Image 1 (cartoon, rainbow, N blue to C red):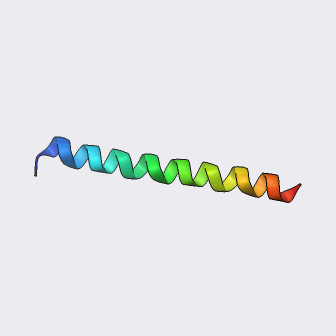
Image 2: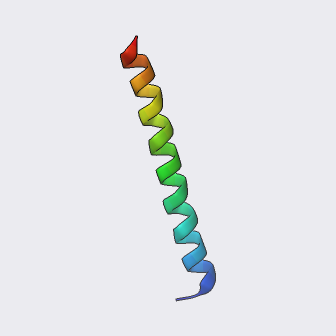
Length: 33
């Protein structure tokens, strides 16, 4: 495995986690209303 591949996978994982957390926050705000 190349270092660039590992970096790409880590970046995608962080990006996915960030998008999910933002989505959950937005959903909770909308449901809160």
